[in-house]
Amino acid sequence: MIAIAGLVLGIVLGLVLNPDVPLWAEPYLPIAVVAAMDAVFGALRAYLDGIFDDKVFVVSFISNVLIAALIVFLGDKLGVGAQLSTGVVVVLGIRIFSNVAAIRRHLFHA
Amino acid sequence: MGLLAYLSTHTYDEDYETVAERRSGRGGSREQAVPARAWSRGAVAAVVLAAFGLLLVVAGTQTSREALALSDERKDLITQINDQTTALHRDQQRVQALQVGNRRSAQQGQLDESRYRQLRAQVRRLSVLAGTSRVHGPGVAVVVDDAPNAGNNDRAKVLDSDLQRLVNGLWQAGAEAIAINGQRLTSLSSIRKAGSAITVNYHSLDRPYRVLAIGDPDTLPARFAETDGAQAWFDLQQQVGLRFAIHTRQALALPRATPDLHYARPVHEGGAS
Image (cartoon, rainbow over all chains, first blue to last red; front, top):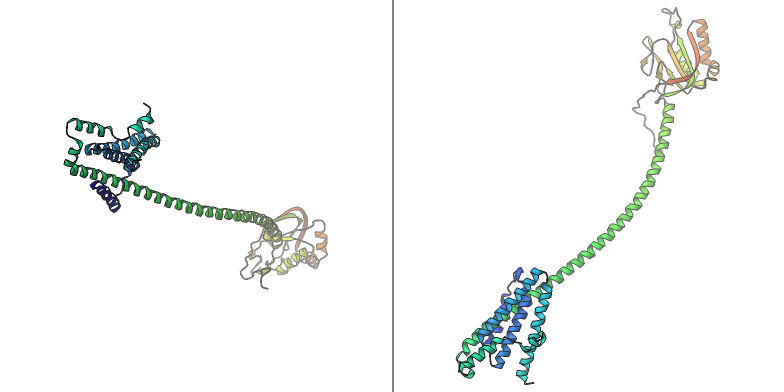
């Protein structure tokens, strides 16, 4: 429950502060969000499987976000930013879908 | 293993399983380990989730803000395009109007040009009549002078009235332009005595008096001889001894006079009259 409260707090904080994103960070933000979603859903599934570990969650969250941003950064430098972003979104999207499906099976036993 | 198969089987971090296996391998059961670290575990997860939520909201607001700015820009551009299109249409119409004006002006210019030529020709013709332009042509040269032994006898000298009669006779005989000793006669010219000399156009003349008249050289001497002025001169020639000689010339050149008008103003045709 405290985790849900953290999520709500973060959302409220974002709405209240409404921080300006620096220009150089703008291209990495959406892909970082997708990577973070992958980590969060993975953690939720692990939690439901009963093997959740906070350290693993923190590490996977941070590394996911950083690697996603790095990939986009490299892609931009190489001139294939859009394609690499698409690849990252596809891979992470598949993982998110599978995770959500597993979570659904856990929650509804169906 | 295929990429897709790998992706769907490894849907979350493998470390979760590794850590769980290690923990159960250490002997402590999962159910015991969980409550002991429940609070800190939840707190860390909450912090990370808060970061996630923040990220989510920031990305969302950023995207919507960009979309807003984009649509504003789009509206701006559409307005600009419409404005410029209107301006373009206006300019095109202006160009057409100016082209029509140009064509009209060109026609007007041609009309003006031909009218200018007519006027110039008219001015030249009139200046010949008025004596304000030099003329040349055939005619007669009349040379008159005092009697050789005139002395103080005024009647033995050429008087202004004698010259007037001579000029009158030449006009009567059909002369078209007359000059006396280089003084062109105009409608303002007077022939009068001023002091001891005869003055034409306010210029004193020296003897002998050379009167040049442009006209038909074949008929001018004969017609002059029939005039009253000629009769008077023949009398003077015979009775007083004034010298008189008339010769036809095939090429005479007469100078022009430059009379000044100070008061006479033309009445404009078409104006109030």
